[in-house]
Length: 224
Image (tube, rainbow, N blue to C red):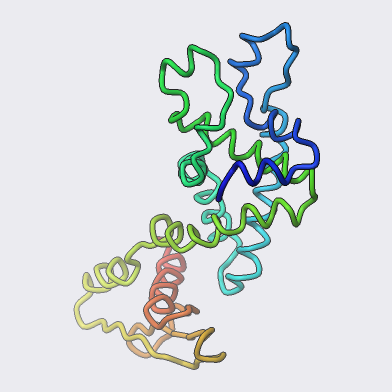
């Protein structure tokens, strides 16, 4: 994304200038009485949370609220926002004080993350929710699978197997109970059995994901 083009699209260019103005720059230029981006960052944080929540709610209907909350937290954390900002070279467009420039402030995670949220807040004020969403959604779409794999994945099947193996003669099996949906959006329903008893159920977009979710439920029911 070209930020110069983004800037030109703003009806109120003072909004985007404010979004890219750090407090250090405003403090060094007090006579100009410049606004800086903390208030826009506050607004952008809420806009980002809503866009992310809406996307996850619509696209991961099989996931419980707790898992969606964890994924959202991974997507809107400082590390992720800093990566988003670096993708569009946001640091090069920021107004920073001399001290921040000297200490490599254009690369500092907190400054970049705050500026990304402030940019989102400015887009929301200038053109509304859909305007902010159009800017933000590509970052979310590209990063959500990474967030799921990095944050959510645990080998629940192995953990469950290790517990069951402590009792000789006990056998775990995973059975596909049914599958639903077209090939491009399939859902698999797996039950995990301890001998002949169902001890967990899982749903996933792949059989492996469904098996992991079934093992996870079994562990939770066992108090693990």
